[in-house]
Image (cartoon, rainbow, N blue to C red; front, top):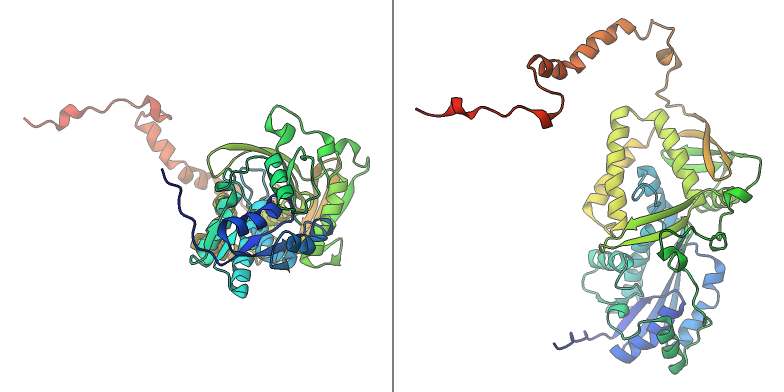
Length: 423
């Protein structure tokens, strides 16, 4: 079988992190495609240490240009806060830190390609993971004319040792020579850990793996109270101080991390079909999701709240699957935004050794009425009215019983079709 011919490429924009893989991809692209390579780096809050010296490293690797975009504010307001307003959590645990960042990075990747006149983009995602799908679906949605190159699906490099040997052969500056036991992804929202000891789901994560949260056992012996103020579903203040969206997350990451908040150990279903195990640290996100739910419980009516919970499952799937730039996600955003006007108020939480405990919530749009809820008052709720409601609500059950039918359909009598036979 003949190998698939490579497309003709003049200039490619590479989603560049400065790690071993993307450093090696730069000369590999030039060698295998004969093209000019522009390195694009996205600042989504991974930290100054990860960004230091990247331009020099990219140029020394053979790139013709290095482009850095600070996307932290956009990441929070246009991606993380919509997830928060929806309450989208993948498989009950994962707050979608990596999943939400990928479409944003790919969007800017396309924009840079337009700015520099590139005819292709490239990424360093492997052929086994979700990120390849997230990157490429976004590119397809925003500019399907761009060619997409995924070296991990083409090259002969199969290990870190192979990559190091390739780097040495091409005089590529890489500082890492010993494989880290874990594969990590970091941004403003979370830090993820995969691989190493985690590949056996029976192994408990070692404490030294965690980097932004202390263990609950070593957290302070005294709880800490934190108040979060929301306007139309978006957090706007912490402990009475108005903060920018980015600063809110940074502040809550520090507070929550100190109390062991936001650790998640999950065996998840990847889009590509296999299961994987990931451990996530999302202290600020965990606090915000908890607080937002508490406020919604106070201000949203039952039917809206229950339907929103169902929609949140689909929204989480769309995000995880890389289907951010789709009509359905935009339609769900329109629905959720219509529900968030009354999600305005303040939530007080108590943080203690890995636990988030509700300590109060208030809103000018609260649907909770003490005079309705109390058992002693009859002027706003006449308890005798409940009898008629129950009779109507259970009418179908009554009719079923009067017909002598069992509660479970498994024990239904077999129908007699003989009466329908023609003579």
